[in-house]
Length: 240
Ligand SMILES: C[S@@+](CC[C@H](N)C(=O)[O-])C[C@H]1O[C@@H](n2cnc3c(N)ncnc32)[C@H](O)[C@@H]1O
Image (cartoon, rainbow, N blue to C red; front, side, top):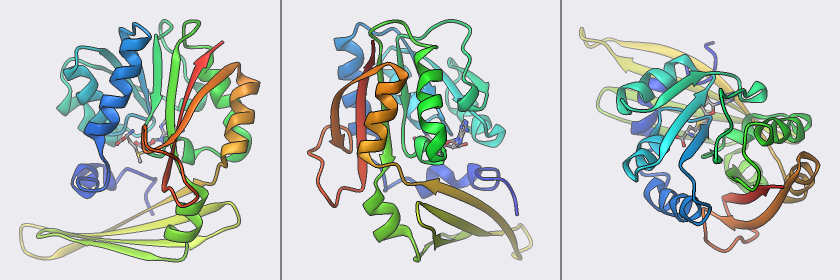
C-alpha cells in the first residue's frame, strides 16, 4: 500500500476532469481576490496545480504547497511560473506573509478533528491582516451518505480505478486500486489509501474563531446556496 496521492498523482487530472467546476470556483476566488486587492495567493494542498494554473492565468502570483512530491511534480510541469513547496500544511511556513490563502477540493478533509484549529492558526500566521482565507470541505452528507460503504470506478482505455470506501464514525477510509496497462499489454496493480474526516459547519466555525478568523460566508460549491444535501461546503473568512 502506497501513501495517498503517490500512485494517483499521475492520473488525478484525468479522474477529476468532470467532477469539479474548477473554472466556476476560480471565478469566485478571483472576485474575492480583486475585492481584497490580492496580489499573492498561497494555494494550500495545491495538488497537481489545477487551481494554481487558473489563478496564474488571471494574473495573480501563486505559491503552491503540498506534501505529495508526486502531486507537485505534476503541478510544476503545468505551471512553469509558480513556486511550489513540498510542505505539510499543518506546519505551513511561508517565506513571507501572503495576501490570500485557499485550500481547494477536500484538502481540509485530510485533517483530523483536533488538527483543524491548529491548522487555521498556522494559516493565520502566514497571512497579512484582513486577508481572505477560502477553503472547502466535502460535507458530512457526502462522506457519510454518498461515499461511505460504496464502491466507485473509472474504466479508461489504459487504466482502471477501483475506489472502495469504508465507513467510520467521523471519517471515511478510501482504498484506491489502480490497474495500469503496460507496453506489453499486461496490467500492473497499484494501491494507495486515504482517510478523509468529517468536519461539520459548527466545528469549522468554532475552529476559525479560535484561530482569529472572521467568517464572512458559507456557500455550497463556491457561491451556491448551502443545503442539507450539498456535497461541498465552501468557507470564506478573513484574518482579524
Ligand atoms: C483532493 S486533492 C486536492 C488538490 C488540489 N487542491 C485540487 O483542487 O485539485 C488533496 C490534496 O491535499 C494534499 N494534502 C493532504 N494532506 C496534506 C498535508 N498534511 N499537507 C499538505 N498537503 C496535503 C494531498 O497531497 C492532495 O494533493
